[in-house]
Amino acid sequence: MVHRRRLRSVWNRVDSGGLHQAPRKWQPWLSDTGSLTQKIERAIGQKLEVLVLRDCRQDLNSDESRYFHFKITRCRIREVLLCANGIPLIMARSIIPSSSSSGSNHEVLRLGKKPLGAVLFAKTRMHSQKKPPREIARLDKHSPLWKKFFEQYPALPSAIWARRTLYRLKGRPLLVSEVFLPVLLKYPLD
Image 1 (cartoon, one colour):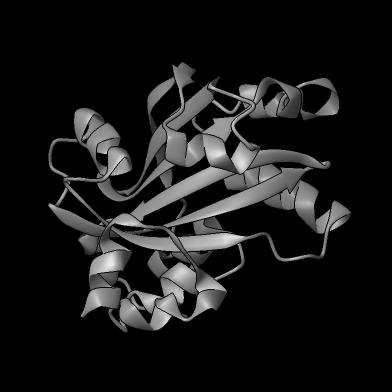
Image 2: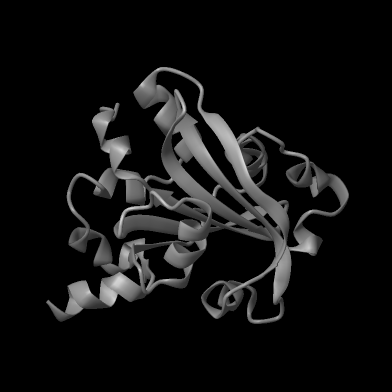
C-alpha cells in the first residue's frame, strides 16, 4: 500500500518495477516505446486530430526542470489534446528548450496541428536506437502537472495515469508528458 501511495505523487522509471502498480489495462500504453500517436492511430483506424491548447514560453515546475539539471527555468511549452472525432484521448505537454529547437531542429517550433511524434520519431529512428528514459505516475489533484492540465481541460478526471519521456532530437533534450484519458480504453490494442 505504501508503494501505491508513492506512485500517486512521484514519477517512477518504467524499469523500476513500478509499472506493475498501474492497472493492467494501462500497462501496454504506459510502457510502449514507440510513437504513441502511431499506436493510437492504428487502434482507432484513423489519423488523430491535434488541438493546440497552448504553445508559448512558460515556467517549468521543479519536477520538470530536474530533467534539465535545474539549468532551465523557462522553455517553449506546447500543450495539446490528441483527439479522435473531436473526443480527447491524450493530453500532452512538450517542453522544448531553446537549444533543442535551434539549427536543424527548428521544425519543432512550427508543428501547428501536426503531432510532435511525427517529427520526433522520424528523426530519432535515424539518429538513436537507445530507448529514452521513461517514467510513469498516477496523477491526482495534488500533482503540479494535473493542475496545469486542469487549467486547460476542466473535464480532466480526478486521477489519471501518465508517462513522461526524455527524448533526444539530434542530441538535444525534449521532455514529453502524456496523460491518458479513460476514453482511450474503448479502443482495442493491436
